Length: 104
Image (cartoon, rainbow, N blue to C red):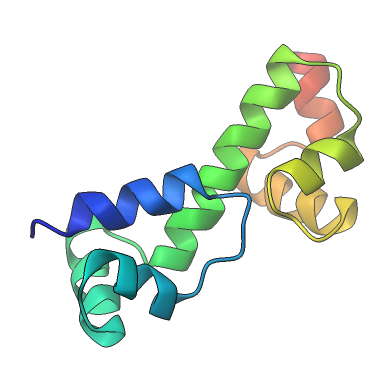
């Protein structure tokens, strides 16, 4: 669908922000239920899972390329706190943020 790139770009560009399905659907010009269903069919995951993955991918880049504190990276990437970030990152990368940085 023509609106799908709009939704994906919005999620990628604003991954550090909280964005609701309703707001995403308004930006794409479709109904929220339609967006959620079609997004999953075409992308293979829900919009919230896609957003979480984008946040974690951005965090991985920051861990490799900067020496920023982990708490700063967590907040910059849209996580509520460092603990939430560390748990999500370990599920994503198989290593804690600190371990991932050391391996990098």
